Length: 338
Ligand code: PHE
Figure 1 (cartoon, protein in one colour):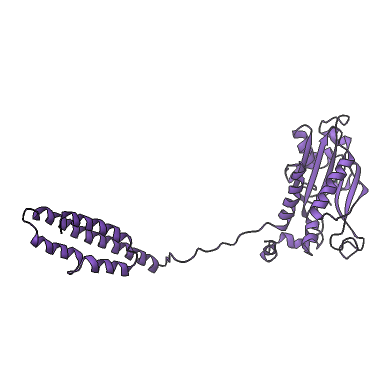
Figure 2 (cartoon, rainbow, N blue to C red; figure 1 turned 180 degrees about the vertical axis):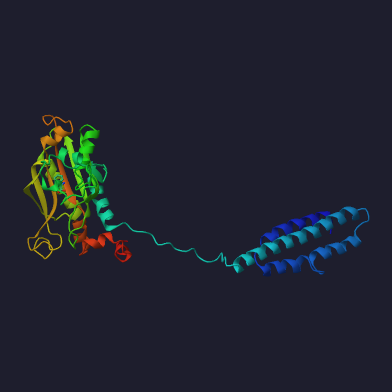
């Protein structure tokens, strides 16, 4: 036993206490170093046989050894007790974390997102507009005649003399055209409102996705190509489609697009009323009067527009048979869309 071995033992102690993680380990440490027959006391015995001139330094080192051993033991002991009280006080650090349920996208949002992705890939940007509109944007600029039935209280929710809830997303066309110059290639998703009797098939609020492209030399062929591409991507590559002539005040010529019923594949079923076809959207070439209302020269630019309802399509796609279920926020329905 010499000075060097005492200091080496101190280092060993410090390393060994690091490996103590249970009360049992700690007891082993105590038995090894701190009891009467333990290493520390044994080394003190060696002091008796040491040369007298070495004793003062050696004694000092041995005291340091004893104090260090005791201090390391006490520190570890209180550390282990703290962990124990924490778990006694209801905090069990070994319990796995609580799982939080993850929300899901509403089926309408899901359908709108999927549609938006398809149009984005074809170069369309997204534009949004307000749900509270005025007569100018919702009707007048869109070439609705003054006596059009949609301007009646029967069909439209008026908030006061000038404000109304938009009845379609087409007013966003007007806002986009008044805010920027062509070329324009935008889609405009959003909620619309109509004063209709609520039933399994119709609701006073629903969703539309509007589209607008304006530039020099835009043709009806481009409109058909865009919508056919959309239909194949969204409803499946074997879908068939047909354009029927129709009428809207803000497009000329106008058409409606039907697709082969994706439930019966065109054979005829209850949903498509045995016709084999489902009507999915209205479209047409932007009427020159609309261009004039937003300050565009109809001799310089042409354009097409389309608008489709989301809710009824989503009902068919997901096999939901009452439109009201979409707006009740019943988690039993929503949980089926994870
Ligand atoms: N706004 C029309 C509707 O609500 C749909 C439409 C949009 C038709 C754009 C033609 C062009 O029925």
